[in-house]
Length: 556
Image 1 (spheres, helix red, strand yellow):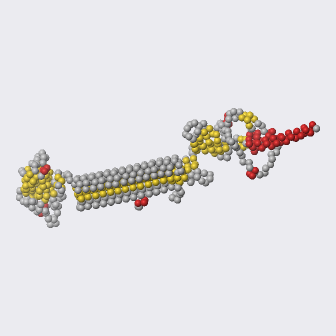
Image 2: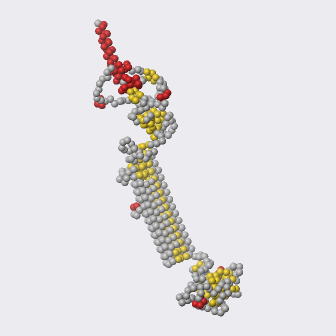
């Protein structure tokens, strides 16, 4: 047999003056006894001898006096483990440790083992027993520190006055913590409690994890009391819905299943955010409520998403209570299904809300810009400003089909004058143009039940009857004609034969009936020729009456 492993455990520090510290009369020693193949010897009494030298090889034997051993009969335990005391029968003295270098020689029967140096600190390869645990592995529960309650199997508790009750529970440290659920854990902190199976409190103070697999990460007075619920931190937060989560903040509540409150809240219960609907979410802010299924409030203050899939991105006192609705800005209310309401303003603004399902409403006193960040109008007031710096700005209307029912209004330039063009998208026609000089150019027919021009006498002054009207009419020339191709491009002038007047000829006779358009071409206002025709006919009728009178006189 041979000793394969052993340790020496002592309390004396070598190298100190013998006058400063007395040498202990005994030193504890432990070891493990095996045969030559490393197999532990059978339990039972065995004779083991000890002596101390001043060198690893040869040298002078310092203890016991003479050349013998201090021989002891030691009971070998399970696994070959044993323990004893050097100096049990022959006490140690100061002269043995007059120098810091000392070597222990051990003999087992007739076998003398290599010497081992005695060092200043005790050490051990393996402990023999710790409160009943054997073999170098602690197989029972562990309590480190005072005042603990440890009643579960395979539990661990450290710190001060903590308790672990159920099997596999753990309290890693801290004070007055309680881990009462099976496999529950309190990592530390003070007055924390993990009461459900596999629940966890990471730290902080006064936190509770009472749901299965629930977690309270830290902070203080947080409560994770539903299965798989999580409160990451903050204070006075509560996750009471299945798999609900509160990221932090204060006085926040995640009550719906799978609901989430990211943070925010405040220092008072009234400041809290509350996610009540299943799968609802509140990102942060204060005094927000998400009560609809899969509803969302991103943040802000005093916002509410009260129906399924409703959304409030943020802002102040916005309400999205219609299904699939969205309210944003300040005091916007999307209270109808699939409604979208944006409201500009401040906390003193009036409520701006939807009035029917499927509405898209915007309140923006300074204007709405598309393609521009400076929506403006020539007059004060609200404006929708559509701007495209690379081409015409357009507004398209229609039913989405390609059968001629789509129309587009374009802001473009014809010649050098800004023009509003109203076009048929499918046929690429331009039946109506309103130019910047005030002209309305209809390049097609106008059909109306009534067409009137302003003519009230109260609007006129300097009224005189037309003179020489018949002469003017006789100076006009009615013609037949066709529009030529070179000037017809883009104007949709009819190609069939026309009848009318030539503007330049009319301009020489009746300039009041001719207008120059924005592109430089002339146009005739045929309605202005009617007064000439009336007065011309009257002149002609007078001439006829005069001729009749002369004829009657000549017959007498």
